[in-house]
Length: 460
Image (cartoon, rainbow, N blue to C red; front, side, top):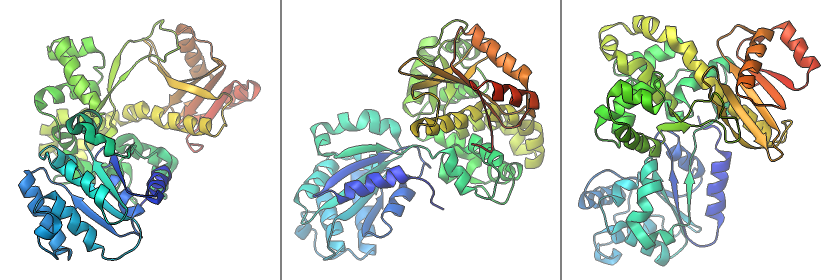
């Protein structure tokens, strides 16, 4: 089921309609839906698709030619197509579509598997685009964020001038998972989103008719299921020295979020930890959280690190440290002993992301009392402010997100206001989000004070 991606589809359509040929790079986390996006876009077009493998250039050419021949594109000799390398391959691809009018589409998935082992590929590709008999659009797809953003352009040098554009495919949003799991309540969708994040590949492994507990047992905790080993695969895909990376990620997922905490727990030097964290951040597996730019630094925590990919956070929180038990216990027993006691706190941590998305949407549509130009959070020593938004006139909106309380009342609001006071901030508006209900007293207070806004989970 394909959901969302209006902006991404519009980007592809606009570029396809442009005169002449173009070369675009689409990249993002594995499982974010890049290939599904392209296939959805190309459903009425003539497309050649190739999934590149991590192998030597000669083997890549052999495999690609074999696929072209199997698809009926084996006409002509190598000499007619300019040799037996990539020049020959691109010539065959173009001729496979025959005399069809219009721009032709060529998609090369995980293209870094070619670039890393070939010095001729980009030269041949750009020559083909320039000399093709008719217009073509070539899409290079990659799941290696770090390669595209840090290594690709330096590797190919001036050839990068032939690239028409880069597009980073983001995770899908909460509204998309609500549409995908249309039969579930908003709270149930939030629970799934908290664990799987915005990666539709992971969503596809969850049964729409089963509850969260059953889905986790069947599709994460049971032997041989896809997601049981996915956390390890995410880390090992591009990183070496897994012992160090897994140690750091395990610490972060379990609350050791400051550099000094990581140093004390692991015994690694701060300099070493910083290098490994930098690599994790380049792959967008870890993020660094500072107090909001213009918020007070009073009583604030400095430089916290978090696992940013939600399923990776879940995997290191509940699975990595309990692998022996997972192997030896029944999945239902494992869930009840190791997952169930901590899952509400886990959802609380991720509820903020959903509330932040909601406020961003309202802000984009001019439906907030301020027109925010900056947003972030304030992490305090004695309580945190989940969301901080500010406009150009320094008007501010602060938000608190409560997941695990059945009822949020005036005492809770008082505690939120105390956190604000400790932070020495002076908000113009305070929003309170809750997965549970609001007390009648709090509702009445909000009615009398328009600077306090209450948002329940169904509104999200």
